[in-house]
Image 1 (cartoon, rainbow, N blue to C red):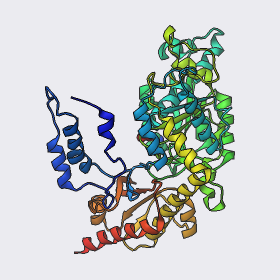
Image 2 (image 1 turned 30 degrees about the vertical axis):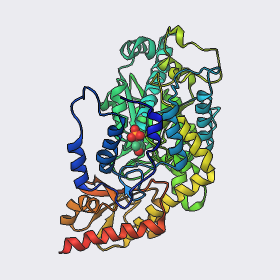
Image 3 (image 1 turned 135 degrees about the vertical axis):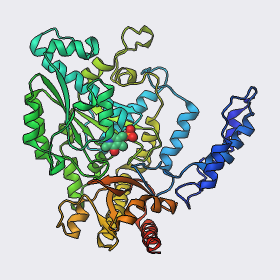
Length: 497
Ligand SMILES: *Cc1c(COP(=O)(O)O)cnc(C)c1O
């Protein structure tokens, strides 16, 4: 029987961590997997034994992907102490942030302020970004972006044919498109994150509607002529999706404010919506010194978009799960997400819209609190410092690889780039492979089986490749670079045996 759970759980230390390995010992994984229950117990174990099971069987079999600064897979981030502390409070206080009820508490005010602080950090005017909300992650934010964009572009076309046009939210996609004289809604982009196609499927546009607006020679860069040609497709409405740092390479779709202005002008001319997927790239907006020029230009002009995706659980380093979404069109948000005719949800008119009417979920976790706490704890300079350490490590790894006889750096700005040009182009991701093809096929598993560091496997130009993504707040170049170099050299030595 569950008695006094709060008191008993208090004795559990959440921060105790074994960090000498990134991955758990394989024996513990096997043991943990075998120890899991697969039948519901009639009477239960009791809290004490359930806690022991978690501590003895489950925790030792989890990885340290967020706790260890030497985990370089995906773009995982960590959890700052401020964010982690607040996240425990979120669980303890268990608020539901669906409806803004100003007399019942300040949770929705905290969410609003957290989003305002976040806009401030990212140099975005929160007054302009009137539709602001936290989501479960960048995938959910991309769903919101395409849902809002779809509503907007179909409405633009529909209003030409009828002054009393009812949008997608009311009529559904098919009905609204027929009235608007549309046959397609397309998403024009450079190399996108896989979740953009997933979002296109979810919102009924379809994965095949996601199209490249790039030249084959530069698949990461939007080509303006190609884009305009595609925007002219008859009976077609368009959403332009900007990959603001592509997850495999760290490359940006645009290279400065001028390109973003051109895209804005094209979008206005053809009634398109601009969505920026800045899941982790958006954090480049906090940088200001010249050594980060390439990154700064990659993030420039984001303020010209209609909507933006960002992730909290990546470079913002708050615990999973947390993403955010910003759009300039609060009216579209309400057209898409409004809960109709639910009298019990109605609130007095307020400057804070009820989150359930501007996003996907009705009942929602208080995921704003860790963001608020973390931003407050570290401030702008704390986040700038964190990001600089991450970029420095990525750049140092890139230099090591480019000088190494055994490895080769991939996705270079151009094949003859000098070392300083290579370094300038590196954000937090380093893509590389082993020159020896026999080692290369096993490279990722060899590196990860060290359990000292972890990298992601990917492919580049049809061959296996390996990818570092530096995203943890604990990153420390002096401590971490030697660990990485030692593992890479060990893998090369082992391959010679
Ligand atoms: C990680 C990522 C996503 C998906 O984010 P989740 O938080 O995993 O949902 C989308 N776009 C980009 C560019 C990403 O890096």
